[in-house]
Amino acid sequence: QVQLVESGGGLVQAGGSLRLSCQASGSIAGLSTMGWHRQAPGKERELVASSTSGGTTNYADSVKDRFIISRDNAKSTVYLQMNSLKPEDTAVYYCSARVFPRSIARWDNYWGQGTQVTVSS
Image (cartoon, rainbow, N blue to C red):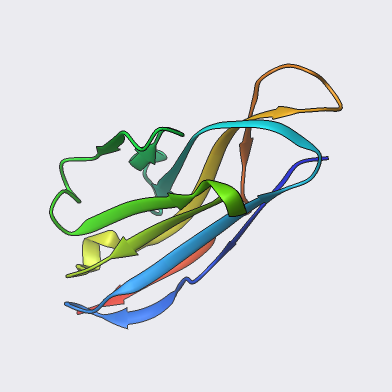
């Protein structure tokens, strides 16, 4: 069974920084695109950033030049460095990954449990 375990959320003042981590574990034969999404109260879940296994990245316009996504393929881990945080960045942040588990032998999408990020003004 594949699991995505996130860590690193918390409370920070505006202008501060946080770093989120997400590690995929289980019997994994392949790991493709990994990313971060967020959902604020009363809003739909939105893509924040993504990274292919080759390192191609994509960012939401609202976080460009402030957030940096990176990954360590050897550790099946993706990171999100969040700088210059704003109150509007407050949300639950979810890790996602496209995984090829040995148990089902096909690509499928998985989600982490979410980690709360709160930015105070």
